[in-house]
Length: 181
Image (cartoon, rainbow, N blue to C red):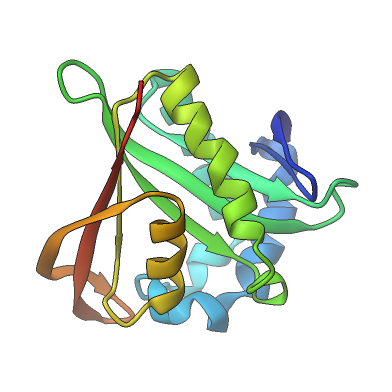
């Protein structure tokens, strides 16, 4: 991991090839926990070589400045707690991106996702100079709704049949947060 941000209970950074096994373990440990919120995954998705390939793709997107992928670890870096991504970064007159996030079942409900996302969002606004971050959630995902609201995201509408999640097309609430800069 390349350290980028530090919070009271976490170290947040970008993944490198050395983190592939840790990322794979996080994904496997949370298959059932994340299943209702993610696309249907084939078994091959969890193969170490595929995880390594995704980390390489994350690195490529970071170099191209089209995506930024953070992993949050315990301070001693012994456990991967959560992931967050800022994807589809668009420059020019838009200066925007999409936010995605997940947390380990073992650490849900402890305020960690807020602790991780707050400085990550600040990094996007202050260091990358983006103007808008968009985040979407399924209407029945009350945890994500509360977290995004607490982080200052505002509802902008509903997208019907927006993403195919858990094997079926799901409506999503569209939100965004605009930089105050």
